Image (tube, rainbow, N blue to C red; front, side, top):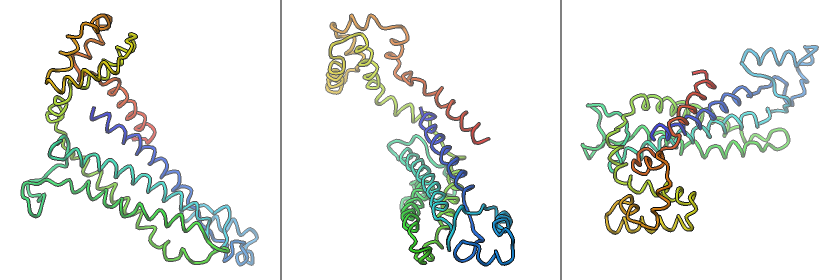
Length: 295
């Protein structure tokens, strides 16, 4: 179901949100002097570490466990990694929705205002430009994570090779926040075409039952269930007859089919009901993350 497909992103983004929150709280600072040993501050304070903690508290930071001329880089590296990881999930969602808006699929898409221009040259087009923008932003910022990893290396307490690259780190955060805001706004107005979803499903629904047929036959000790069903699918594609029609014509399968329960027969006769626990799982995932994130 479409809801089950979206539950994937509820779960993935929920876990990323927790990770970003965790590492944002682990960012550290220092007021420990040029080499991190409190040389200068110890001239004025009996306990320079208390002074450091008091100053950093005003900035919403904790003191680093250790510092020299710089704070241990892993605090920032982990934080930006959590953001880039979340950005990747966001880009994946944008890409999925963008493909579902393709003309030949057309199941969901961005809301299109009456005055909105879809293409500069083709007036009829409705480009999924917001989703494309999010993926494009991810492509810009994701490779910058390599620079954060490179900046973990600092020769002899600091060699200044991160002084320029470090200045661009805030852009990653700003880019991510902008993408989150854009995704939030466009998803609020997402258009879902249930009729088109049903039509798309109807084009392949007869083949959907190939899996449950094979599994049920195997469970009833058919000696070669997978091959039997595979051959039937080939015949269906060749003759145009439905898989269910061909199934009922197979005398050698009749003894197995007669042992099916009413529920199992119902699924074979109504492929749209072959959704397992998709609905329950979707609700479970959404309820869990609503609770965990306090929504």
